[in-house]
Image (cartoon, rainbow, N blue to C red; front, side):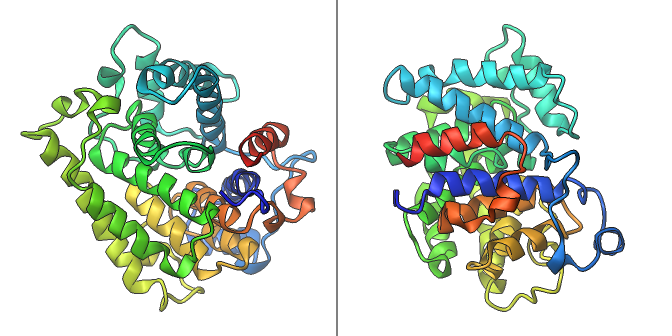
Length: 339
């Protein structure tokens, strides 16, 4: 981890800023957004009573961050150390009066089931690959000291508590890996190639230590069949992204190239595309991501996490960063992981 640039602080701040910027534009098409907000390149941060409010994307990112902190205070990261605090944080989010920011149905259904004595694998929505799986996973790309197996297993586990579809697991793993690579200083121009290689390398790996018998809830004949299905869908969208990342017209809705982002693999690809269109201009990347026909807050949250991991804390102007909701907690985690 390159500590000088404060990658964790940059990524967490960027995620929340993207989330806040995309909050008012989610569920609108581009003409409606332009009519309401004006030209996309000059969009200002929406501030109400001095605060830029976020959605469930940032709320659940912080839930994962708290669970990780609790687990790591008890020793090295293991499934048994992570599952309990993760489950408790997701349930606390589900029960919070602040959980009124258009949360996804899968998260609500699964988190309600997590309030019972069911094994978490039975609470998981095995057929859902919504972007809720990976909009919140950035902390696993930022927390220092994890091995590859720990990061991948934990990324898939945090997704699987709600979204059990193999594509949700693979997309979450890839999202955390992308954040990690950018934080470590990988050149954005080579990022998609690195992610495709990672997907091929992991295509036959079912993380049984972290996932248990989750795969048996699906219709797949084997764990291998289950996991390959997820990686292959992610590889397909990464190939699409690879084909357009250098030729995409920034004035065109990025969703037209890589999908609307309601599902996990498209949220990853379209969030990445917005970042890769403007790798040195993070505010423009966020503004482009928020002005999309798809799941604008999640696409912009991911774009912000990528940009912040790449450029660090200085990516974001103080006038924006100081107003984002949960700023103190985001900065506390950033300081903890950048130390």
